[in-house]
Image (cartoon, rainbow over all chains, first blue to last red):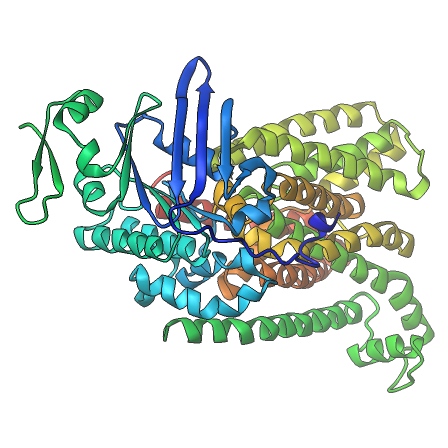
Length: 276
Length: 353
């Protein structure tokens, strides 16, 4: 009944932030079926605190589904999912909202809220807790990191696709959770803002948060991720540091398209290019 | 940081100012509605008469006839109008939040006619198990079943599309219209008169017993509604994002559907089908106050009460001594508004996707 009537007495609930390198979220032997089709099959993956893990793979490989499973939105048909040392289903909806934040692929809004109102929604999980005192500082920081400060007073629905994406990211950052799950945060962004978003992801990782990020651009993934997991047909085809995982042979097979991989002349990071 | 501060500061003062302004407007409309009619009583005397009942004697009292007219005819009618208007507008605001669609309205999507069918069925089939509460209860049941049906049918992945919603409304209204038609066909004369009343929509038959039959139901809904405001804001992001921010979406929805059915059926049980109040009022409030539900829900309730009393005043004065059905009047104003809203939505979205 208390839940029905709202947050009359929010329980203090300060999530323990795991030490860097420890497992923040994990999928073990996860399988998801959609009708007769296996969307995910036997996926085992650790997400560690302090790292940026990029999920890459062709369209329909199961990247978004895996993100949905890790976030607790979707219960896998087989296998286990853990979040901060506990089965994800054991956390309440409110507890989850203080532990993981999710940037969806499609950003929607039913009513014309302003940008600052939308970003402020990200602080809702902390209402009534001590962390609420940080609201203004966290909001200002999230808006600065995503370069949306000058949009604060604008209506969200009047923004372009790329601007909406950055505002949605600011809301997710403002949630201040130890696990960030970002589904294609760079879609519709220009070159400058793609780099900006990846820098924000790196910055959160350096503070000890775990960041999982779905990307299509393999060069971006190679340049910014600590590890990459290549998904193909619902399975993890390879997982590890980009320089080891991104080989012409693997990518050619996974994408069914000839691919060449060259080292960047200055940094040595792999440059992935389709053979043209 | 600079652009953030003025926006929130303005938001903070705007809320109380708007609510106070609407409350004043409501008081003014109430006084005017009580003063106007076949037997006119000056507004100041209306005030004195009310104050006298609570033990404060100031100003001139109305003469005995005026006193009777006020307490037996006008006051129950105005109180009922306020309850019905507040319930309909509040139900509209909540329903638009639940469906994630500013076009959702109890009348448009068929919830009102579902509630009316419940009420009409109770009358025509001679059900009288709960005394004065029977019709209210039957209206509630009809409203609840219809809301659940429309909800289950028209939503996909967290939002109800405009086309699905409007078409569902057409289908529901067709079915309930046919059922009411059948019940009318088999009804006797006395039942017929009651049934006709539902379809026209009016608060002309207001009495104190009618007020007491509806007041608790409406009050329950109106008091419960503001509790959901914050979570409705988050629901505007969609089902999954709202859940990611800690909202138990499925439960919130079911509870809100019950509240909407409660408010709608309370209104329909006493006043019949008065459409478009739930659409026009929250929309106008949203244009002034923004979409935040913490202000939208109470402001819609206040504005809805004022609008319905004003509408009823117009209904009984424009063709005096005859009375225009209030439901026709609101539809006359609300219909074109709905057209405009549809047009604007299409222009803005570039289609119905």
